Length: 60
Image 1 (tube, rainbow, N blue to C red):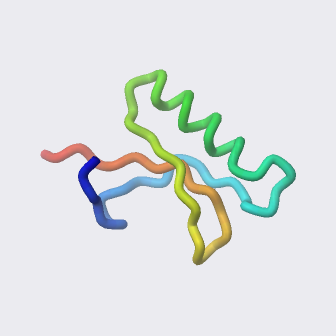
Image 2 (image 1 turned 180 degrees about the vertical axis):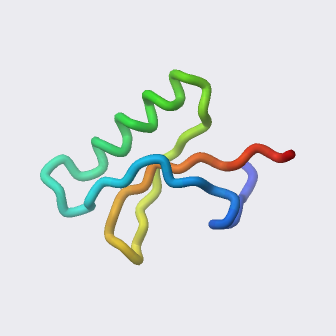
């Protein structure tokens, strides 16, 4: 997978890391986006203590 910078990504969904379901809400959201053809992934946002479902912008 090619590396992308923070400016090349769009946050699709956020879920708190301290929530009872941990990363599951963001993972479920990313699965739904992938089913629609969006290349979504989940990462941990350390600066805000959240799991983020992200997509990279396609090159134009």
